[in-house]
Structure formats: C-alpha cells, structure tokens
Length: 304
Image (cartoon, rainbow, N blue to C red; front, side):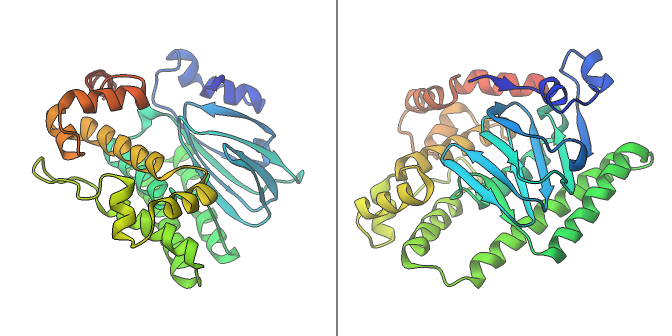
C-alpha cells in the first residue's frame, strides 16, 4: 500500500505546497492549521507518514482497517503514521479545522501526549470521539487560536501552540473518560474495558527493576475471572484484534518509548517488558517494527 506524505496531501487537496517542505526536501519541521472548508475532500484509504487532528461537525464516512464508520455528529479525529484510513464527506460544506504536522515537529514530551490519547481509545478501530455542541465550540476556539498563532504569532509562538495542543488533548481524554463513566456498559463491553484498564495500568515502566505481572492472555483472563477464549472472542468482536495482538502492540509501543526516552540498555528494556533474554526482545521488536531496537534508537537520536 502506498504511503502518502505531506507533499502528496497538499497535492491531493489542491493546496499550494508550503515553502518549508519544498526547500528542505521534505525533512523540515512542519506544522499547519487549515479550515476544513478548503481541504476536507475525499481522501482515499491509505497510510500517511504525518500526524493529523481533524475537528468537524459535518457528516462523512471514515474508512478504517475494520470497515466503514458513518460520522453524523461533531467529532474529533487523531491520526498518526502507520495507521491506514480514508474519508468520504457526505456534505459539500465542511465546518471545522485540520491541524497537521510531521515527526520533526513533535518534541519528546508532546509525542508522549499524543501516545496517551491513542492509548485511551485503543479499543476503537480509530482514535476519535463524538462531541456535544458545547465541547465542539470550545475545541473550535482552540483551533482558531492555533491558526492565529501559527500565522501571526511572534512572542512565545511555539509555547502557545504547544499549550493549545495539550488543551485539546486533555479535553478529549476528559470527554472520553466522562463518556465511559456515564454509560451503562453491557457486561461484554465492561470486560473489554477492564482488560484495557489492566493493560494500560502496567505502563509506563519507571525503572529497570520494575517488571510486568501480566504478560500473557491467560494472565489477563485469570485476573478478570473469565475464560481466555471468552475474552479473546469479545476483543475480536469489538476491536477486530485478538488478546495477543493487543498485548503485543502495547509492548511494542512501550519498547519504542523506552528506546527513545530512556538510557536503559536494550537488555534492560527487554527484561522489563517480560522477555527472558535480550535476543528474544530483539526478535519480537524486529518482527513487529521491521527494524531492530538498536537501529530504532539510532534513527530517533539522529532526528533529535
């Protein structure tokens, strides 16, 4: 499957390619905020190599790995590299904003914040949440400020943009948690939610001495007092992924974070994640990330 880069995105929406991307041969830090009325066109199902936050209150079809999702109310979406998706608008007028940026724009701290919002909604086929009109208007104001600071800001421009992005993220996480707490969740859904709570609560690892107590699907099933096949069936039905796949994805994510943000050795990281020998962690990482832990760390250091 072809991967769309930022140059491809601007070409597809028929927008002038920003000079920073042209002059830098695609490697420069890039950030932009665009009104959706001028860019919310049909997007083919594909993989993108950039990050994007989309705020919209107009109907459309979100195309994910697990099928199509009709959106018919105010919604905010978060996309990131390595995630396939597409969008088909169902209305000519699109009211909202798109904020997009590349890996070079993200600081270590901000990347961790974006990981948080994806972790919160890991059970969904895509990272999104529906909004009521009041919350939509509040987030719309933050996007207006982002656009204003990006175009005209001088003093403390980067700091203000960073703060606004955090406000957006924290508000979305808050709405998501309030929605879960306020629902009468069916038993199956509740079990799935409890599984993800157990999974996420094991992280982050704070020191090389910390170990994971829940490592296998059987460990989680036993803690939840359910049969491993029942848990696996519920997860497959609701998320399209097995218990093992979710555990592996979370281990991979934590492994990447530790390689990027700690001075632990690869052996210490592997041991903390439950691998008995360093070569077992290296094999796992290479299988899922397609590169070794050592190369991943080296590439990250070169980008900083």
